[in-house]
Length: 239
Ligand code: NAD
Image (cartoon, rainbow, N blue to C red):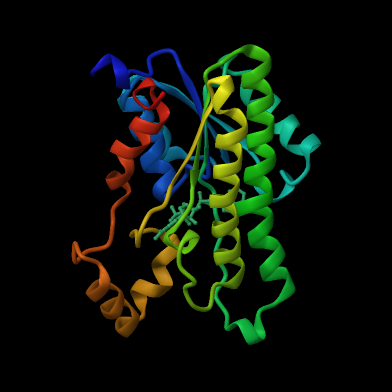
């Protein structure tokens, strides 16, 4: 491991790491020496095994992140995350939810549920992490999992597009506000990845074909595809 990418002794929160991209991100961080605190609704058993295989530990804080939409609630969750290892160096806001319906019929609960987790929760967890980094003089890293829909409109995903476009804006704002304090805030905006999030699209033969025709690589992304970008943004390589 090149020292620029070495995360030995560091601890990362990865939200929603019991499956999909979060599981891949947790495993990638562990491969560089990082311990993991997961925020998940269920025990991330498979991810724990991957992390252990790299000789690191994963401690789960069992939570539904739709509660993390106030400074108090997010701050309390962050305190719980601090206790197992006594430090947090990296926050990966990965947990996300998507609801599909035509804009003309889009329901209010499908707006709130998505915005609460993808945008509001990510912001207040970042705020809690930022406060900790500033007070503890940690050169912290925040990595938000954005989306192609941070840049494009998409179809049938009004609240998701709003949340991911908002998350990109917040990433830029936090990067501006915190850069001088040595805190890096970045986003990874994946294309179409093979996870639960896209199961409905992949099951729809015509959408699956249409999507594959537009992906230059001609295949859906895998959870391992994000390892390099994650390690770069989490490590001193991106200082
Ligand atoms: P996924 O459904 O496998 O993972 C989503 C994760 O978020 C799961 O761990 C889930 O439990 C967690 N989560 C959702 N709501 C939660 C809540 N209320 N409380 C706690 N955890 C909650 O799908 P994924 O594709 O791995 O999604 C991970 C991130 O990647 C999301 O932010 C998603 O928007 C983003 N993303 C995915 C794609 C793709 O093509 N799959 C593309 C761009 C961005």
